[in-house]
Image (cartoon, rainbow, N blue to C red; front, side, top):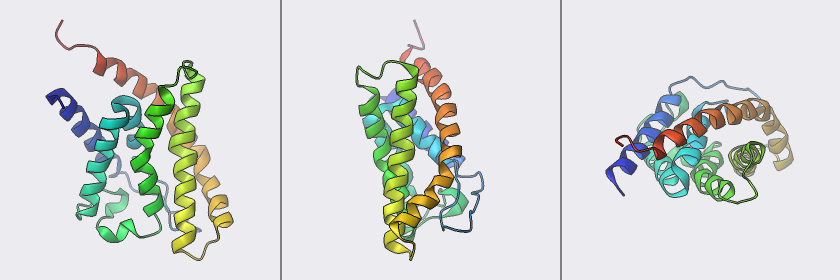
Length: 180
């Protein structure tokens, strides 16, 4: 990795951590709050691609595992990785790779296609993995878990659109040489 790649990866990791400082919104009917950190996860996939994006998310999750309070609401430690939100964290880990793969397909050249890839990978797949794990560690059935995750769809859809607009601009800036 070049120094530029390391800096970009570290900056996206820092952005994910900063987004965790925005307090989570508890829902009450499931133990999973609404958070803003998934914006950073999506940004990692769009701006950094599969390899660097996954490294950025891995660094973030490693810090959380080691006990640094980088998850939304100050959550941290190994216990988070077996708790109700662990499935979402796993989904976050694979999101940049899935997103980069989907965005690299020639059929996804238009904005709507790119938005759909981001939405499917960063919202639907993450929610499906999170729902499955939620049903394993809580008394909520898989159907109930999937139904409760419908609450996240409107807000996450807005996040996808916002991160797409920002990510396209950032990607253009990161591929342009600083010195000509």
